[in-house]
Length: 151
Image (cartoon, rainbow, N blue to C red; front, side, top):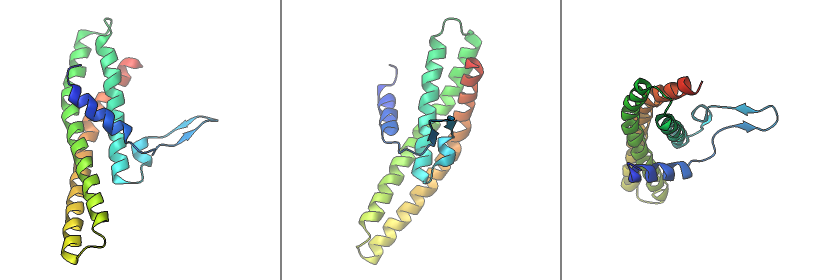
């Protein structure tokens, strides 16, 4: 494993992912988890989940001796763009969750403390939103490459 800390961090993010996708057993229906997420952090976790699944598929493709070397290079280039975006998103979601917890904990505090917590939460929410927007395109590109290969 090339990046054990990255893998550990992503697995922790996946383990903490709330259930935000719809599933119907009879007449199977799948929905985009990011589209049905109700909160900012659910949407971020859905994007991180998608990234982790795509990376797993991409790894299988790279290990496939029948996959063309040019495609593997293209996949590697897409991964080099998507991974930093996913890592930034993970950092932003952790900061948002901490800021939200601090805000909730300060509900009975003095007005200046509450105001500081509200400001920190607003900043964290804005940064999380920006990180999600920045991560969506590179992860979607990587996902499109994987789908193209898998058919």
